Length: 432
RNA sequence: GGUGACGUGGCCGAGAGGCUGAAGGCGACGGUUUGCUAAACCGUUAUACGAUGUAGAGUCGUAUCGAGGGUUCGAAUCCCUCCGUCACCGCCA
Image (cartoon, protein in one colour):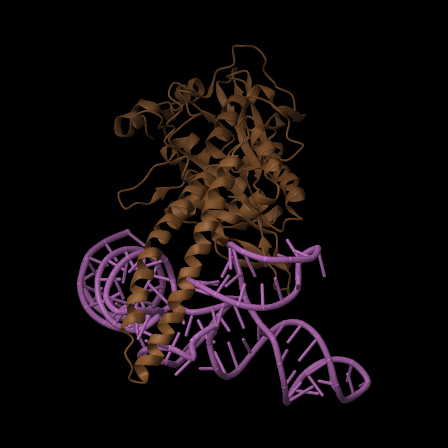
């Protein structure tokens, strides 16, 4: 969301900002509506002032026993004008917020120009892709060979884009989540949170998924939305709050399921666990002052990268270009992990600085102790990491074709109950 | 699911149709006093929008007492709907 006053003051800057997102100039329409609205508002306020004054007189006259009929008639007429003006004001207001709430955030200057993901810029590359031969099996082959990854059974109850894991792989998934959560909570200073997974309209509006991206979400019959990411829950913790700046930044982390309809993704990543309706993710959210957010963004990205370092997985970090950066973000780093089965780097984390975009929607302000002026806080979010995709990465990178097993990364061993590797289940039953 | 109570400023808490943007208290800020701190005393202390205007000082107006409707000349106060909170009961992980 944006401040109309800022737009009024410097419309060109906003249009230039949106132009980088490929949008036509928006401010002429916004400002025209704004001007109409203010005109209506002024007239409405004048009418209200007159009504208030006349009503006061009526009171005086009546209390002294006089006849106020003609004044009361005046007010009755006034009320008709007011009703018309109010309706007009309402419409104009709605129009303006309808436009403003669907406009994306303004990008930072250092975000590279570009059309789509091909124009993203690599920032750093850590580790070397191990198996470059095309024979590397993908996670589906590995998981099914081990007998612990079952798409058919999942489809039986849930349809496409679901998976059922069991035995060692199920355990591995849990271990991965544990490692991430412990690392962020114990080493990176994030407060562990177990938040609601069903949220209301205002929460999803606050983080920017609504009103524009409703079709990407699942909705319950009670009107709740299933969170597409814990960013929604964690960020909305501070909705409607005024925060003491000396207490910032707040850092929250949570391990939650995420639910996405994948409405626009038909035919994309149909094989395997890459793109599911439901997956686990460990999320990081930071709430900062405006001065802290840029540094916090770098820090958060490092926190995410640390997980990959612990798991000794090759990855690269890229900065998204103008065409690929999400709706609410001013700047986004994606971390991509090497997947031998695809011979490609694939997104495993996305760390975004949203500036005050979400804070404005949520009315989250901060204030220096003792001062009374408030300013909007800044919010950041990042995956730390997507658990399902990390599982894929571990399976594919730690697959041993000689032994036909998956070795457990050292960092995960403490969470695997003594297990050193995952080997094929040697019985016919799917579930042990 | 049932019943009942309640939702007021940064916080607590009065108010029960007009003189209430809202008593009182706490907190915060400014000042007096003070060797320092503390205490005491005095004062200030909501937000948004609009008009006017200027160095974003001020002045005036409007709106805001959970949200949205309604009644009324006039609503924080009366009525309706919704949302939320709390308590007790039922059911249940």
